Image 1 (cartoon, rainbow, N blue to C red):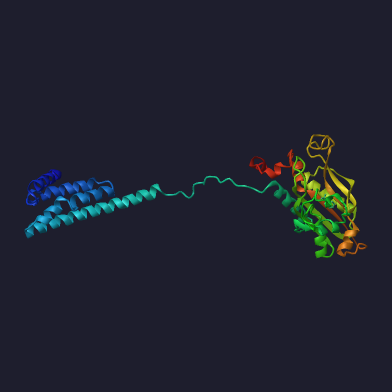
Image 2: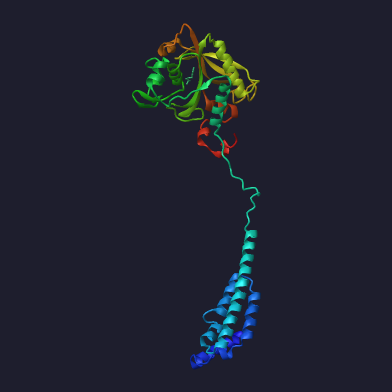
Amino acid sequence: MQREVREFVATCHLAKGALVTSLTLMDPQALENDARAAVADASSTDDVERIRVEYLGRKSQLKLALREVRDRETGMALNALRERLAAAIDGREGELARAEIDRRLTEERVDVTMPGSPVRRGHLHLITQIRREVEDIFLGLGYTVVDGREVETTRYNFDALNFPDGHPSRSPLQTLFLDDDTVLRTETSPAQIRTMEAQGPPVYIVSLGRVYRRDTPDATHTPTFHQVEGLVVDEGITLADLMGTLDYLLKALFGEARRTEFRTHHFPFTEPSIEAHVSCHMCDGSGCPVCRHSGWIEIGGAGMVDPKLFEFVGYDSDRYTGFAFGWGLERIAVLRHGIPDLRELWRNDPRLLSQF
Ligand code: PHE
């Protein structure tokens, strides 16, 4: 009905300019009924907005009529109609807006009690784990953990450790020199000297970190690896103390059932020097590929501190004796976990690392 009226008005406008009043053609009661019906039907605030434009907008029938009205009474009646419609539209709009907010609050509510999607967590590298494990073992024995330097002078890396002139380690073929007097340390042993220079006896320390050698990488060598250095200096320290300590360490690392064995060896800074072996944890000594069918695994060097080192740092070598050891952490890792190639520990393939 309302649309018909409007079309008719439009036709009149087109036909005869603006002279025909829409007022005469508009039935206000029908218009109000139509508008109210449309408002009641509206199901969204967008609908309501469209209805507002249609019934109250600039080109609405009511606006046209108001523009053209000449008598006061009709004007007041149309204004009242406009206000009623505006109120109805506003009311419905408010209702729908509240409903929409309610719906969004329900639909878009985040359930904070729902479990989140799992985040893949990393973990410490196997070498870091072993490093901390060894530190913990010695902290438990009352030792102190000290830091060394990766960049060392030849004085601390060689001279103070009693390396003779011409020793192969002093050659640039074996050691990475930064200049004539500076190297990337080839072992953690310089930490022995630095510790003894910094403090008097008794000394009970371990020092763990990276060392560097000019090696071509293969299954059993990498140019960088980690060592744990141990140093004890006190009155009455004997080889038996060293062997007892290493036996304890090996059992902590490889299992209580392991047996240990010490064979003579040579290092410039220990006298006597020994090499620690542990019964194979894979075959329990009966022979397997890990122990190369010998039943024993070689772990690393140790010995009684050569009194020449005490002279170097000013310790009284008549009163004090000491022991030291220096083992590779990668070696402990590959042996303990049956990793066939040392280089795997530096490739950092998560498929390998995630197993530890
Ligand atoms: N520094 C030796 C090495 O790198 C290990 C070692 C340390 C041996 C302390 C004896 C005493 O092979």
